[in-house]
Image (cartoon, rainbow, N blue to C red):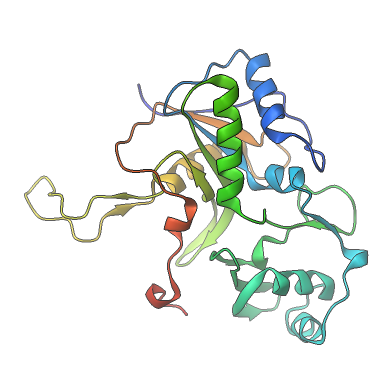
Length: 250
């Protein structure tokens, strides 16, 4: 069966503290979607962050001197900059309108994932989950308990990419599937040994789900990826993070 990506209908705006696993399970049941082994549920990071109460009221944020300096250089709200700095271990690059950082979970990304879009209340922003891999593992465990089937879960977010324009969905948190499939030392069709072929399997799934999930007002934060198969060992999303020693740009 070829791979397919199916939006899970009936999931509305996620409220702070909402039982996200229960909401997803109810939506699957209402749509008569039966889960099968090796199905993967791709869940938008914003839905997870809202459920985990990662919404911040900017009126409660007091910018530091460093945040005010960076805000002046980038033209950004100093309160937002303060949150970016709190969520980060390093400022990698910055220019007017953009701050690229190393997030404390290891991701090199713009704005540390601090985001206004699809948040709702004015003067509020949303932060990434505290631990995206733990969030994915918790959702997987609770859905597996409810449906009695071994599935994978990806917590995804849209990222810009070095060398390329545009954004694409990537996997931040991964549970129940390989984040990377290592094909090094296999041979190609001409018998040549593959030396650098590591497939970002979870990112590829997240990217496919992003096409049907949408990036604006679609309101479809959960996508079922079906028809996938793998034999590689399970890994968390941390396997996708390139260490600073391997990063040519830091």
